[in-house]
Image 1 (spheres, chains in turn orange, purple):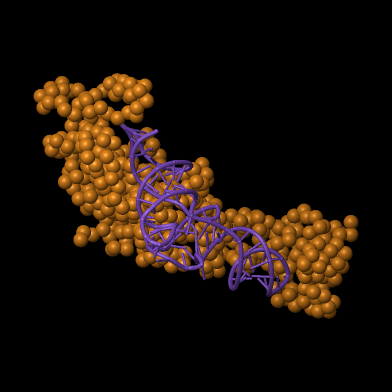
Image 2: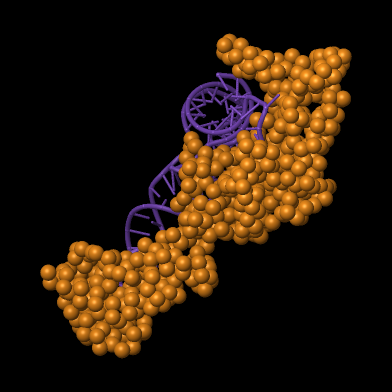
Length: 483
RNA sequence: GGCCCGUUGGUCAAGCGGUUAAGACUCCGGCCUCUCACGCCGGCGACGGGAGUUCGAUUCUCCCACGGGUCACCA
């Protein structure tokens, strides 16, 4: 059995759609779990779409998530070049080989004739399909036109009757009537191959054994099948994967803002979490675990767990997976990621940022949530006195005011401004007063943060903002409650 | 419209003729707790519809509905 070789063949659009990334992932997994090669081929033949720096986006994204290729434009390999535009010259001879074999033919129909045909058929309410006008031109006629320099394309000669069956690993055998198939163009007037043709030739020349691609190619698969047969080449194993949707009707697209890998990075997701989540979109592992590293996916992946129906991207689930990854991070690592986000709203430099990070880790689903959670540190937000009232804590305006008045002197007298020091002082007060913790600590939290929920409680917040701010904010609270 | 593919809770999905129809996310309770979150425990919630085949269909067949894909000298 030949070594497994899969490929990822993106167009450089400057944008890595997560559906494409997932296709790359699956291709990578299939290759790696058989000890095969994963090949990167850049399909840049659509010059109109060329975007500066776009191949770098592809390289970077793939490297970021660890999908390292064994052969590609930057590192070369035995079957290069790996940039399609550099392979353009070689296709015509393969098409001519097909003409020799009687599997393809020269077509001299010009645009006018084709447009006319199209209009005519449309007028009759029929769908356009090339009428094979040039299919049976005699050798002499062809030669005469060629000698005269008439522009031409080369078209594939489809069977006029019978059926074609191709096999997809997921969908099984799919059979269609040959009558449905158009004599598709292989070589364009400019001598360049069409995508469908270049793709087949390239895959064959590169020894690709498993083709993983989007479901949109399912309809053209019979044509591919016929092309391979016309050449007498071995047909690769096909695995068509479904699209990722925004909802039941719409594919996830650029404008949704969740569609590209970069979008997700910008939104504060971890690259490992993104890779993990997209693997789960349209694929189910055997067991109940859902958290997998790339290496674990290599072992766990099985194409038979792939779904044949489109999957909807669920931002909530993506967040949940991300949260799990964040929780599993080493605290130092988390701090490394979190500190820049903390600093977005915490500009003062006298606070223990590492400590804040430690409080944040269990509460962070995506990093972009962080700035809002710690914005009270620099300055106390405006808040309503109603915030002091909490039924479960049994606090109200009156006892909150009393609590703050009780706390103030204790805090004033405290010199050991550490977590333990503050904790001991406050709990000493609580014990002395013989009240429940919440009676004292809830009003304190509100006075210090202006929020009902904060990372950490009154003790932690007091420590973070420091003694001066603590006293100032308690006084502010007392004033507000007395007003 | 023709052709191809698909359809299990709100979402991702397990299931491959006989199951109390998994699990995860969401949501709702409870516990923990100075809040929130985490964590733990529990709960709500599904086989698109109709005919067959069968002793028995979520599983097999057909029809319908719905959804997706595709019908270029684009890739």
